[in-house]
Structure formats: structure tokens, C-alpha cells
Length: 177
Figure 1 (cartoon, rainbow, N blue to C red):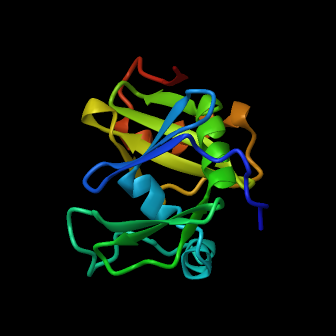
Figure 2 (cartoon, helix red, strand yellow):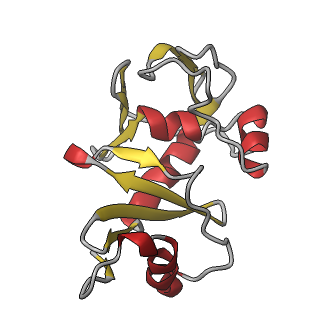
């Protein structure tokens, strides 16, 4: 478990309908959308579900839209969120949120045959994939797309082309943006 970060955020803003914005001491702001937080909940139950290839959210009984019901700072260590699906056991450490923000700088975005935008990120040795929608909203592809962990970043365009081949049209390709 990461150690508490003595240089936690300068400010934390919780928007129950949109997500979490953390402003770090250097002035950098990192925004974490609701779905990204919920599907990556660090609690043992959610980690276990992901390891078994099961969806963390949404499940068939999940309320829509997803919302944060409550948020509580956990000392100098992180923040705990309570969701409208009743889940409340995950604590997001400042160290983990910083790692996620840094990983975004390493995010790979692909135009898939001119019909779909996909973000692919490496987290904890695993590839995490997101469909990019209108206005830049991200929806997890965890239940639809499984990229093998051993696949290299240079192999992603070919893998995505194979996976989404039904979207292909003559003269189109998967290209990194």
C-alpha cells in the first residue's frame, strides 16, 4: 500500500455529477471523471471483480446516471467516495491519483478507421481502454475489449484493427493521434 503523501493536494473539488478535480501544490489540476473513478475503485472487492474479468460498474442493477453521494477526506492519505449504487469501501490515495494523472500524459489515443476514438493506458501492468465520446467523455471498454498485458505499445494499432475490423472500410486504418 502506498505511503501517505505529505504533499497532498492543495485543493479538492467534488462535483457529484461530473467527478473529482484535484489541484496539486504546483498548481496542476487533474480531473477524474465519475466512471473512471468508479470502474477503477481500489477496494479489494472491485480489484477482485476486475481480475476475474467482471464489470465493476455498470452492473445490471446499477442506478443511472452514476453519481457521487458523499466524499470524505481520509487523513492526509486520500479520499473515500460513496456512490449512488451504495458502494463506499474504496479509498483513492493521493499517490494513486497522481499516478493516474501522470499516466494520462502517456495515454495513447487512436482513431479507429475514422469511426471511433479509443484511449489506451497502461496501469499496474495492464492495458485499460476507453471509448471517447462527444465532448471528450470517456466510457470504459473493459467489458468489450481486452488487450493482452504482454502486448507492446507498438503492437496496439494492429491489435485494435483486428479487434474492430467490422468498422473498417476501404482506405481506412487505425492510426495513433
